[in-house]
Length: 464
Image (cartoon, rainbow, N blue to C red; front, top):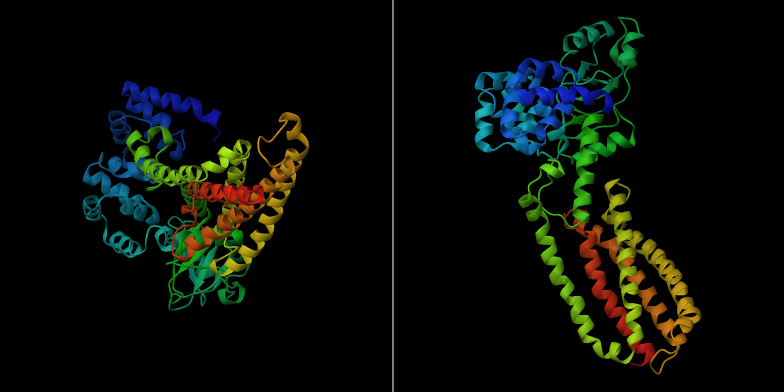
């Protein structure tokens, strides 16, 4: 449903909430996708939220709650009475129910767990063994599952029984008598074979799978790499535990990319699913202040370098014209290299074992980048600057100034490029997220090194 098509029902729903008209609210809600209902709920105040949830009831609220940002879920569930909660929690798919239990408080976990039926309790308890950011923590156990010794007719009978509970039947997985994954089959393969055909004869090898303990990002990458709709999740003994679907992969990649973007921007703390306008100022402050204070103290080092080499600037004030450019060039080139490496690591293209190859590749790249910049700036200093500035104001000439700036630029860009490429790999080697090597921290480090390089090279070549 397009935005224009949902605009009128949304407006009707908001009017119904304002007028406390339950019938009108239910009528409008029927024409709105549950994801849009969740977005509308996020922007309501507490009283409106209470009226909204109590009016739509636990049946419709099941899909809405599953789409809510994690910080809002517990509050939403608290609007329902125990009998209603029992219905809502029972209607949730097993992966959504586990997500709920992973984000609510311990007190709420105990209360909600007591409302589950025996089967849901056992299933939820088993899934909660896996961390939230693992494949096991994101999978659903409801999948098309048949055994290799079945015939097509027997398989269809089993699938007909499970058709409402299965997450998808686009891919059906085949297990042996010990529930180990042995193959996969498509629904159309069952439709176009005779009923007495053994499943073993028409199934394909299930060569793509992921361990339940693997990181969720690995599962999402596998789904993307092999163009899969469903990815089976197995334990260390290859027992089929569940599946991760393509929509799970989209959510995972969105979460991971958001996390990387925030870390690159120097934003710390737990990633919030609440929209920007609904995130409190205190939350925004807490997530951003630590980095800013830390980087401010790092930047003091830049001031110290300026103070330390103040005598050189005093003898050749024209050097100050090119200092920001040399420093910025290092930050830009280092940031480019870090971004390329972080992206490649996220896609599984490189690992910590490739550090030397990455270093050699970025050394050559950084050298040519620095040399190109150096030639361009040296030509500017030699050919253009004399027409703008009649004298350097010191004993050296424009040719020597061009040489000093060119060498400093080359060294700065080369060193910053290699540093930017290797820092994410180093972070991964000590079990840190490569994205923690964020642009602000890299830029601050390169600022200091750039000043040191610039003043050292200028002092040596210009004899200052």
